Amino acid sequence: MAQRRILLVDDNPHDVELALDAFEQAGHQHQVTVASGGHEAVALLRQPEPELPDLILLDLKMPQMDGLAVLDEIRAHDATRRIPVVMLTTSGESRDVQASYEHGASAYVVKPLDFRQFADAMQTITAFWTDLNQWPRAR
Image (tube, rainbow, N blue to C red; front, side):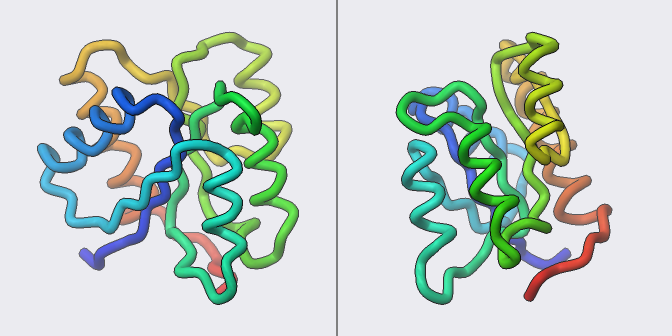
């Protein structure tokens, strides 16, 4: 399995720590970059000659620039529009699910509260999107 680049976008340091712990426990050797908010994520993706991620895990509810605005930015540019974006959020509201897919989300996952379930979810998400799924790449 090739090492993949994952961009984790989440403003909650506790959730970031849980995600990184879940990756570590699952034995994933992927390169994970963390953006602590929407503006930081967009800045990383818009750098000159960025190392684009193979997968973006994106929180929905963030201050200043929420996940939908980030998703719009990702889908608006040829270089990033094909990157799978999994909304990883605490909201199970049907309007949030609907809006996420309307804005171009590849998947929508509600963060489990139990760490073991969260770790299992992270392993399943990354295994599918980085190992099993095939998609056209812009590179």
